[in-house]
Length: 404
Image (tube, rainbow, N blue to C red; front, side, top):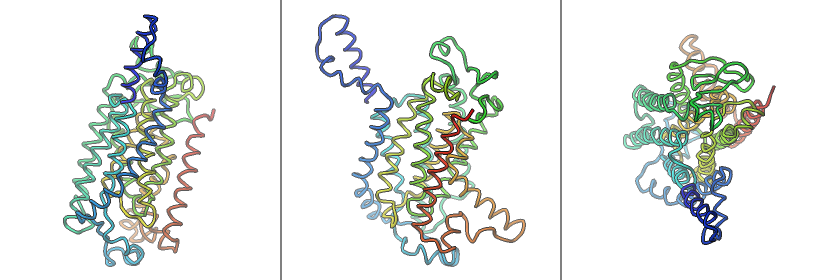
């Protein structure tokens, strides 16, 4: 809405300037602010935060009235952890609808929703959120901690991820990484990082100012792997009050910064030497809306939580972050910036693998945040320390952009 309002004002302003007659457009010259991504990104974050805080109590009351309490695993399943989390029984879940709704509304108001990068991230988020909602609904309906079967969930995640990956691969505007507006108009698909041309199929990492490898069409399954992996990693992280929400804030804020830098030709190509696309800067508005929505949700999700995001929120957030990493051509950097998510997912993989191969467990319980709980850390200690790690990893990841 704000960009459309700016376009309307700009046309009127130019018409007045050409005719020499000053009217309403000159009087409303402050609308010029709406062209700037920085202003609209900050506005999106603030709007999403306000929407989440205002709508939060009503959404929570509605979820309670619908009796959508979070099923907690029994003592037979998780032993001592059941004692630690016993007070969470009945806390409403599906709160992810608050995050998704706030993000989408703020994006529609402050961003250009038909920008290809914004559109693919928003649609992936909504689709993953719908899948998570179905999973949460089944858990609540059957009063069990098991929802949709893992095979069904993975299959639908792959479908969503492959659709997003194909869109990213075949969409013409997305193929112009590193090109100036004139070069894109002339049909140049990429530019040279060092001596190698960069295309949509290239794999990049900030330490290397060249594309590491160009996978061509094989980048599609790689993109799908990133989206599915990130979606599940965030889902695994969402086991303590505010843990996934706070970690998401640092990751989304980092990628908003990267998207903004990557959208500026000189900053990206001459100073930082990172993949550039003239359309990517708009993605910062979407990501800042996610940051604001998570801050608003954290208002109610901090310990002791009044609402859980459920798979509705965690799958949606993971899908959005994974897609954003692909859009900025910084997929590998997500391993560092999203290191807490990676740590949580790897702890589960190692735990399962060790038990199957050695019949021994590495951790007291996986994901790893439960391991520290069982070591005697208070839930708040685990959450805040993981937030600190996430912030440090985000800062380290951003610092890598200018090395060499």
